[in-house]
Image (cartoon, rainbow, N blue to C red; front, side, top):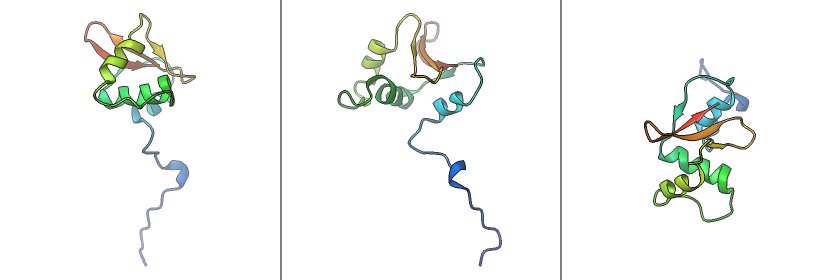
Length: 99
């Protein structure tokens, strides 16, 4: 028998299917520094918040084209009811998340 069993309740385990950057921003108050998005973050955002099963999933071949088309508005795009905004930073030309 093990003396130090490190059991973690299911309520405290992280869900690997969720995006860690979005989930950490979801639990924070508004304000703070913007978080840069990489290619996998953009694919997750487009597949789960923009298209939501409407078409074939976004992959690495078309993610930049679809991000420019759907996320590059003047004020960015809000992600559902999370209060998180994804936008293209014009000075660095990088997509960022902000709450």
